[in-house]
Length: 94
Image 1 (cartoon, rainbow, N blue to C red):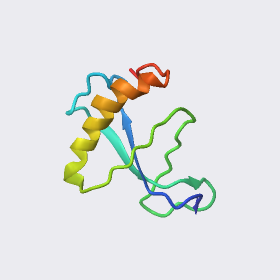
Image 2: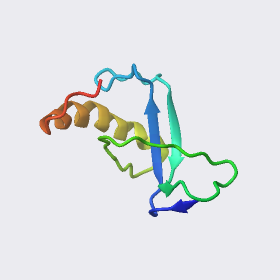
Image 3: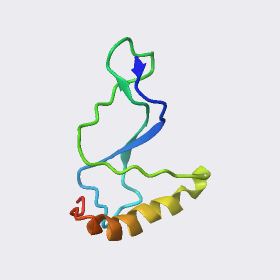
């Protein structure tokens, strides 16, 4: 496996019925700890490839301890998604 950058990523894939406007804190999602790599070579044991389709994505950086993440999530879903996302001309992602 050949990494293409030095980044470490947390990728969350939500179910199709998930809503950014009315987020359900109990809703399940699939979480991946990820790196960007090309699909050449042998994948180390215990790892899997996740092919992320081209599209529009937003990257948020959480700084702080894990127990403070709900404050970051609140900012993302209750402030940024509701006010800034439409400002840039994008429809709500639901």
